[in-house]
Image 1 (cartoon, rainbow, N blue to C red):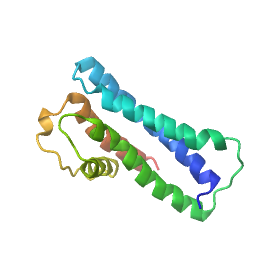
Image 2: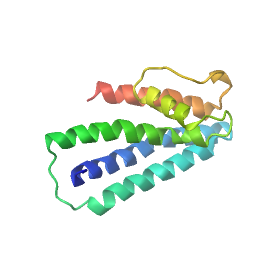
Image 3: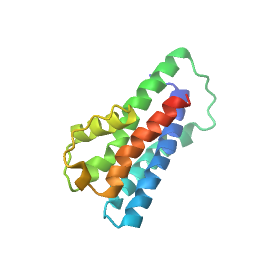
Image 4: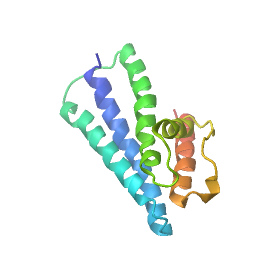
Length: 145
């Protein structure tokens, strides 16, 4: 069973992760590439899920145990990778299935640089920014951990 502290931390991480979706929205708006909606949907889902995890438990006392630390790390990688795949899933062109979208998201967050996409230069600028931004954000987090 998940501890309250682990769920609360996951909520905070989801809300913080939603902030990484604001720059691609701005890029889409400035370039007019028509790719804004996948990021708006992902931002709304991240904020809603993060608030749903955090707000009911914000006043709940809870100390993290070692086991909770492992749970938070596992949840961080799985949930944030799943939520990071939402823009790729919602994207109309190119149509990407959920497994490929999850792979793209996990690849960005782990900074492996692997991709299943072809014709990356033909993608809208906001999607290219998101792909590169997720790897840059993840590498920045690794550097400052």
